[in-house]
Amino acid sequence: MESHFTMLLGVILAVLLTATGAAQLLKRRMGADNLTIQNLTARINAWWVMVAVIGVSFLGGTAGVVILFAICSFAALREFLTLTNTAAADYWALAAAVFVVLPLQYLAVGMGWYGFYSIFIPVYAFLLMPILSAIRGQSENFLIRVSEAQWALMIAVFCISHVPALLSLTIPGYEGKNLFLIFFLIVVVQSSDVLQYIWGKLLGRRKIAPNLSPSKTLEGLLGGILSASLLGAALFWVTPFSVLQAFALSLIITLMGFFGGLVMSAIKRDRGVKDWGHLIPGHGGFIDRLDSVIFSAPIFFHVVRFYRDLH
Image (cartoon, rainbow, N blue to C red):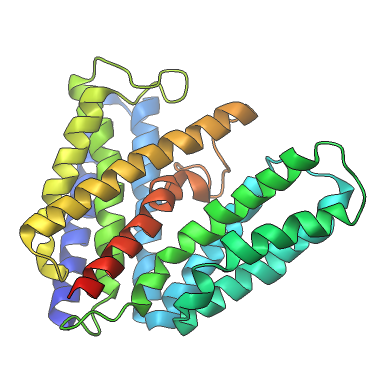
């Protein structure tokens, strides 16, 4: 495992160094005042920080990874709730979401208690929150308020928590290597985002949803997903899957990542904002960085779990 981890770390560092060098070269050719170059540089710098944080959490083992994603969920939940319709009657429900539901979800994930964290939010929390709001007696926009708060929990906590939940899966012959599943998920999905952008700039003609995300094109989608799926197939050696299985799984999660980004864009347009937040320079908020992972993580988790049960 240590040799695999060292090799993966080397690959990541090589990619980041190459990207940094390319950005510096473009800066000299196009000028430091070019807005595209400034945005690119800010994104690369942010990735250096995020890779360092993720690397440190990996060194902390299960506890480090669970705590990292719990913090990410807290930040994402805060971002989502700031854009929702709320009333004084919802304060207890929102407080329960942040200070009770979120910690219990990640505590169960850390304990590997699948029977709890798989149903706690979509069943118990979904029923609890409207009850807490209803007993305050304010009916105006009740359904809208409750639905938005429930979706905030589903997106920011339930879906994201399935990333560290991968550590709780016991796969015969793959014991002690589950961190690589998280690496595989994040690298493939995030690479798909970048590759879709690149292919879209190179060949993009037909826009998929111009009112939601003008930069997304059919050519970019096909090129990005295929390229990222080939990358996933090349990374099969860090997973319990064959080359073909890794390719198919990459295809599934990149498609879900694309749809996740589209849904998050629709919500932002509905709320009239460009980004979910500004905590990450060059990347917007936490949800802006996690939007693809949000939809792909639970699908990836359950497909891997189904694969394990078949074996």
